[in-house]
Image 1 (cartoon, one colour):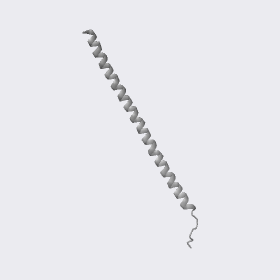
Image 2: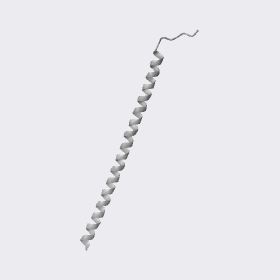
Image 3: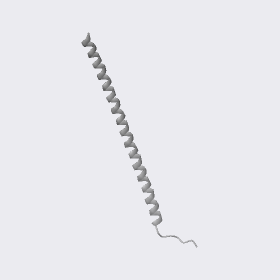
Image 4: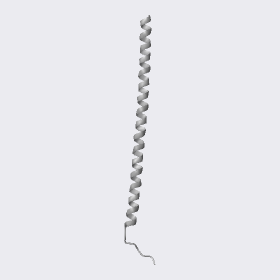
Length: 69
């Protein structure tokens, strides 16, 4: 009643789907890391810009104070 199949077509398709799923997972992880790095870089850039603006404001305030006295 039960015939043994000599074809490997079923196992190849399962292996192909498994490799495809791993590839999609890998691409998703890499893209997530890239997006996180971009967000971190933007936050760092904003922080540095604000820091330099604050330091420049302090220096300008000191210079203005020195000129008055």
